[in-house]
Image (cartoon, rainbow, N blue to C red; front, side, top):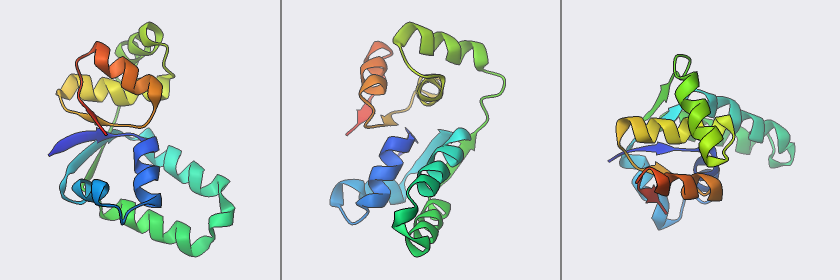
Length: 126
């Protein structure tokens, strides 16, 4: 299966990786804007209470995923339009833009992304 994964879903997976509902991630081709790296690393930095071992472990797990990072450099206008029309941040709209463009599902726990995905008939993975 091929799908877009956003930061909210990735972080939930990392926190609950033993749960059966996330096993699909390990066998899937995941796609995300390259900004995902900044988002998850920022979460790790802002949660220093996790400890170095946990951060290293989480970063290692992410590196083992079949995750394609997509450049969105040339797609600013389309993403801005999605953000503006759907009351999303530019960051969140970039995930949705990739799902719309590639016609693939999106894995997100962000309520605004989920709501906007319906406007584009994009399947949301629970």
